[in-house]
Amino acid sequence: QVQLVESGGGLVQPGKSLILSCTTSGTFFSIYDQGWYRQAPGKQRELVATITSGGTTNYAESVKGRFTISRDNAKNTVYLEMNSLKPEDTAVYYCNARYKKFWNTAITNAWGQGTQVTVSS
View 1 (cartoon, rainbow, N blue to C red):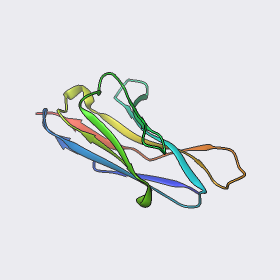
View 2 (cartoon, rainbow, N blue to C red; view 1 turned 30 degrees about the vertical axis):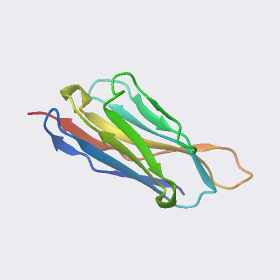
View 3 (tube, rainbow, N blue to C red; view 1 turned 45 degrees about the horizontal axis):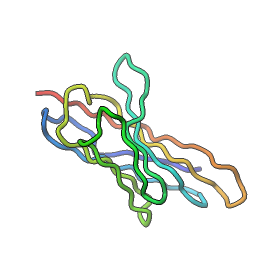
View 4 (cartoon, rainbow, N blue to C red; view 1 turned 60 degrees about the horizontal axis):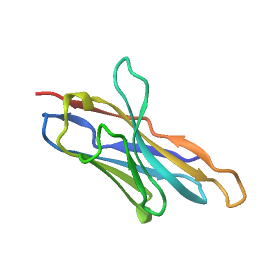
């Protein structure tokens, strides 16, 4: 089964930067769109950024200009570089991947376990 593992979360001061990583492992034919989502306490999970297999990116308005999503297909890893962090960025960040297990199967979805990002002075 496909597994996504996030890393890089932690405590950071406002205005500083942090880089999250998410590596996909297991059996799969191909990974298509990938993304980062976050969920703050008492809030619903929201989209942060997405990236297609071709490198096309989209961002939530709240992070546009501050966050950058990228991927290394050879390493099956997607990254989220977070700059100019604000207290409102505090949340559990989840990695998502859409993939095919085999060439002739439907596209399915997988999530990581989440990594905590806390922005506080």
